[in-house]
Length: 266
Image (tube, rainbow, N blue to C red):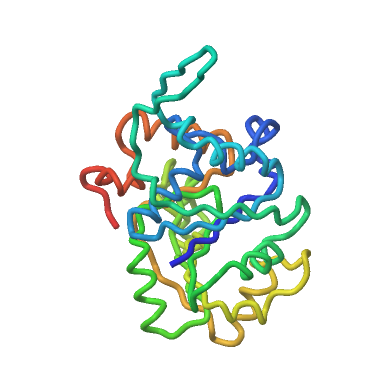
């Protein structure tokens, strides 16, 4: 299945990095988070990508135009007959990447509408360029097909950011300083969507999350596949550092192409 990845946002809450590059190109473990997301999809056999570009999209174009150069050891032959020898092979050689300039100010629904012109099948995959997970993509696809939904969302429980108070009769009886995860499910991205979603998309200012998803919910056409394993977005510098540290210490559960980490849930 084709994979649409929304890569055009400004990433203002990560301005330390996004002043110079789009958020999907912010590195964790020495590679852009976008690369990690694409590696996850490719692990499950989905290697045809459509990237919806916007803010600083030229940085993403440049990365993929020179992908072999950026990811390989090379020898340069200088002089009158210059040449390049690449010493590294990589697992991405069978990827197809379509790079769409969908506009700097276009909203998520407008970007998706433009991507539909390149969709060839009935269903496709969709996610954002700033979140990683160890969720089995093909399990979500199977769930989507079983329920005949127009769209299926991967619902996750994010890591807890704030301490939990335990209150009884107005008195604080306990305090969990660092809860492992929140109890409520949220939109984790990693959608499976039928191409008929185009009937719900309008102009450039169409916000997929605020207009399309509520309408699908009201019509009973949106399903949720609950994933109880690892998920983490990268909205802030602190979250970037967290993901980078996980890469460095071998606890990056989303690296399913490397077997994940021992004891992970998913």
